[in-house]
Image (cartoon, rainbow, N blue to C red; front, side, top):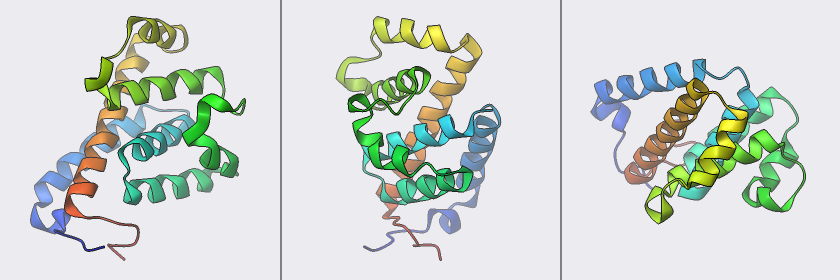
Length: 148
C-alpha cells in the first residue's frame, strides 16, 4: 500500500470544496447512525478501505453498533435493520451502482414512504458525497492510517 498522492496537500482547494459539501450534508442528518450506515455501506460497495475504516470507527463512537457494522454487507439477510434503514441502504446501493439499472420507480416509491422530498435530496447528496470521497481515496491510494 502506497499513498500515490496526498490530494490534501497537492490541491487544498479541492479538499476545502469537498469538506464544505461534507459539512453541509452531515448537518442535514439528525439521525447520525443512519448517516454513518449509509457511508459504510457505500464504502463497502466501492471497496474503499480508508472510508470504511473511518466511518466504522465513527459509528462505534456513537454507541455499540458492532453488530450493525459486522452484518451491514448482508443487511437483506438479517432482521437487525429497521425498514427505514433498509430503504436507505437499497437507495444507497442503487445510486452507487446507477449504471446497472438506475433507480427503479418501485424503490423510489418505497423511499418516499420514509423520507420527505427534502430528506430524499439530502440522501442523494450524501450518497454522492461518500461516493466522491471513495473515488478520491481509491484513486490516490489512501489506506487506513495513511495520514497518521
